[in-house]
Length: 250
Length: 250
DNA sequence: GCCGTGTCTTGAACGTGTTCAAAAATCTTT
DNA sequence: AAAGATTTTTGAACACGTTCAAGACACGGC
Image 1 (spheres, each protein chain N blue to C red):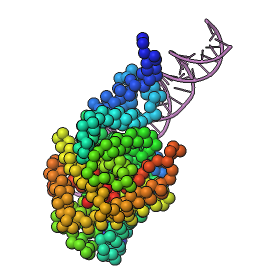
Image 2: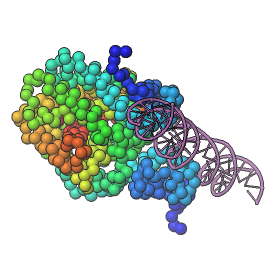
Image 3: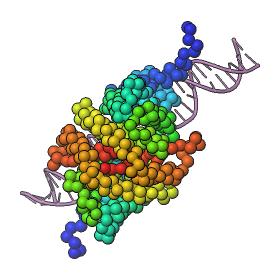
């Protein structure tokens, strides 16, 4: 009554289909859930589902944002409370795995298409830019809100969120393959790797290793420069972050 | 005449189907090549293709081994010639990208299913163990055949090939997404990252950082211990290597 | 030679994701 | 309110990966 408009009929239908789909994905898995089943359960026709979603895979894009919001909500209080970089990053990463856990059964598809350059789910695809941006913004807050003993060098700072984002993708990749009870292995990995990362940031901030750090950063910049312009959006810091996946391995 | 048996009729048919399939994949891409088209071009029935290959994806498993053999052939002379760790690793990685390059168009599917825990293409799946083993064996040779100034610590040595294998997977992941002309970006990344890795191995071998190195190795061991037994094969050093993806990120 | 047992081959049929022209519902304009 | 335009909805149709029962073939034992 009092509220101005409320969600339009169209939006309602769209939400209905999406909710039905995500629920069925969670229960039965992605491959096992057919578009016909989704449509039937949602009480719409098959074609109607395709009117709102370009493909079955496109539904997952929304799922990404969904889990991202859940992550932010779970990580929020931690960032309020914790002030050291280590505690903040650890809290954020734990929150990530916590919120993701319920979807573990259907997580396969997540990375399945995510690694395909042609897929819209690919984290480097234009369609994923919003989600990716929000995600790195979160890690930026994790870093900038921290009171570290060593001052993080100015040249490292802008790349750090990107690097941590890549790190967090690595953790998710590990988590997807983690079949241990309660994802114990992933949690163990998170605890330790966060500690190691913070130590490495410390080391990288020492004047002593400044040359090596500069080398790595220069490499990232060069890779970035070679990348063809991605979208006609603002020029994006898209693919350089991947370098970190391969760069250090000890 | 002189040769004892030659390939049986069955093997010939199988090879015919596979060759036809791989050729069509290379030309048209994976998704665009239908099983019906493969069967028709190979001059067999649709069902016959399925007699030899459990699924379309299973054909790629053979492709893996195929490219691996090509890689070995290309890397062989380099290992003969080069004696420093850096030159050996660089040569091997260059050979990898060189031999892979022709398949770039159809590489998407490679990682698409490769990252899916349910897929047989997943590098950690039982079906991939042979390929993976051969691949790490190669990197073991790269390392062991090298004359480095610093002696690599005994505790690091056995893990090194696994870690480098993970690194090389990271490079492939990057390569798949690399759309620059002639894969310039990938080659640039390889040049620099190999250099960095060798430096890091050097650093990790210093007594000074022994504690940190031991920490990382201990983490790998613990993760490995938590992993449930994979196959009823010999107990495998399967999933710990992933840790390196996430472990260091600076 | 013939029979039987295994290997190989076939094509029709199923269920899937996706497309599309047309119908229905809704909104806009007169 | 009628007419037109736009948005939403429908279900039939398509192409694909995959399965399967049944047929064709090869070969060793009688």
